[in-house]
Length: 106
Image 1: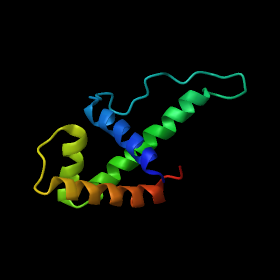
Image 2 (image 1 turned 60 degrees about the vertical axis):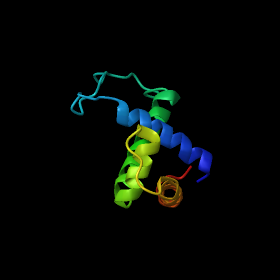
Image 3 (image 1 turned 120 degrees about the horizontal axis):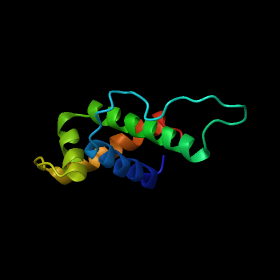
Image 4 (image 1 turned 180 degrees about the vertical axis):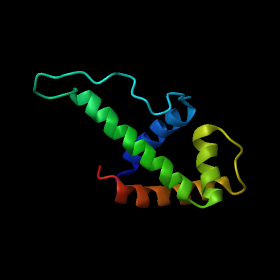
């Protein structure tokens, strides 16, 4: 995985973390009958894959060392910076690049 792709996913994760979702897992649209052909557009499929990728990034962030998590939260969510913030952020980004790169193909 390239650094730019990870940074893009982290920006999407930031929006995901700030979005208040009270839907309880129910779909926003009902399932309709289709007379054949493809169901859903390419954009819908892309959005679903990106949502899964963001959830993967969220899971990996939560698996990091607590201080690394705090550095990521400080950078992307504006929380209090931990001591030695820059070093911990760099280590966290390196770990994310490695782990997320294994879990997400592109």
